[in-house]
Length: 79
Image (cartoon, rainbow, N blue to C red; front, side, top):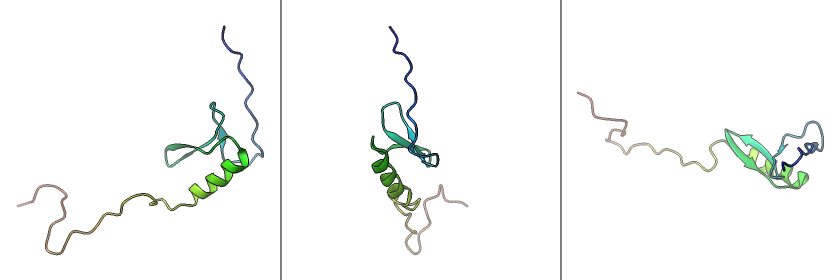
């Protein structure tokens, strides 16, 4: 027999930026990636603020300039 649909839990406040996932965690989609922050609303909000405060380039490698006298590797050499 199918389980009856449970009512969605309410947010702690209207401006709360996270949504409650069906796995019970508070989640947010950031830059196209789904992130879960835990089941406690206050702790999840604190973690979300910490993650959202990181600059967009955090965790990514910066591209290094080509050494002097060399062409960057953008494809085959031209004529």
